[in-house]
Image (cartoon, rainbow over all chains, first blue to last red; front, top):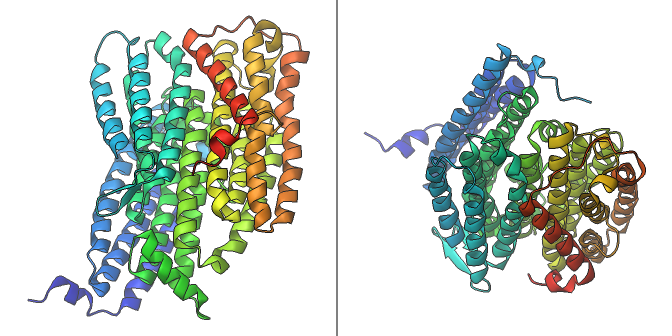
Length: 109
Length: 460
């Protein structure tokens, strides 16, 4: 039974970098193109998870625990964001019966 | 550190006080809490302490900016009188969120580790998402909350990706250790692409938070929809703490890597100044004009960031203080006027000079300070920033900034014209005694900063 960092190191670091960057870009494209608030929100979570994966990979390759600790903080903050974000989306749904962001155009000049 | 502990425990205590029937005691208590925090914070002056494995350093820089954000909050609070009069059920929660978000602001100015920067930004932002959408029945406020939330967490994702790439390139989150690695790598012919990309993403993420162009587009919409009381807090505390954190990151970590980011930031400063000032001219709504004005002030603060010498710390401090005081005064008056006249455009101020001479006078002075007229704090704020930039030989940037400041006179003076040269559009606006005291205090402070700037201009 190998140590987990050793298992992580069986795959070259570049692959983690490319994979995380791809996930991150998919997240960005999702945020910019989708029109449903909840799906946009899921794409933001995807971006955060790409970051988590990359942090873990860097951390394992450098044998430095700081990166993995950072992952816990990101998870905790993401959970707090989910609470607030879903509450805001529910509030909008109650008032408008929709979560499509195209409806939200009251604030323009 | 004591101020962080005190603010957190006062915030929790305040939630329990919220159970009481009477809403009247909450505001005096919160003001008392903040006054205690302000004093306790200042007792640590000249006594640098580090906490959490050197992740937080409370030095004079952190104490000075903590004082600015706490003072701003104290000055904002009196304008929540209408919430008390309406017996708003969530009053204690609002105040507690303000106290908690101040903890985030303090972490943003005291961090030594990118982890603390990230947590600080998030504590501040998540509270602000809630407060932006706090007017639950109002569609504009709902929309502001959602926009701010989606844009803010998107920016957080980008900021985090930047932090990770910097970690990949340098192997540490400590800003002082990043500095040596970044300096070594940037003087190399082959700058590490990880470091360059990481710095770019981090810049984008922080520029979002301080609303610097071209990442400013959420600002006017969110500020317009947010209840005015919370807008006064958002546009001052978030900006002051954000720029202090931004400056610390750039000056400590990336001072040696200037060749990577300097041209980008200069371009951003010019675009921010242009969009902020020219956008503000086109507005008919005073509230939206103040949102653009906050973008343009971000532009001036970026010049201080760029000038990047021993004067720029003081310049950012002085400018944030002068800007916060004037903005709180202007938005506080807007809140009082808009509560009665139900209008946030320039027309709401028609004839205020006749119905409420005091409000009109305070508004005039704060507009003069924002525009940068001598004898007010805003003038010396701009002067310090320009003189810091002059040492760095950024003359053409100063000329652009002065031209843009001239544009600023137009939209700041429109409200003065409306107040003194138009017929009144409503009755006398009622002003509470605490709010009157706060307004007079802010006026005096603006004049003190404008007549004796030496008191605070060299403290850092």
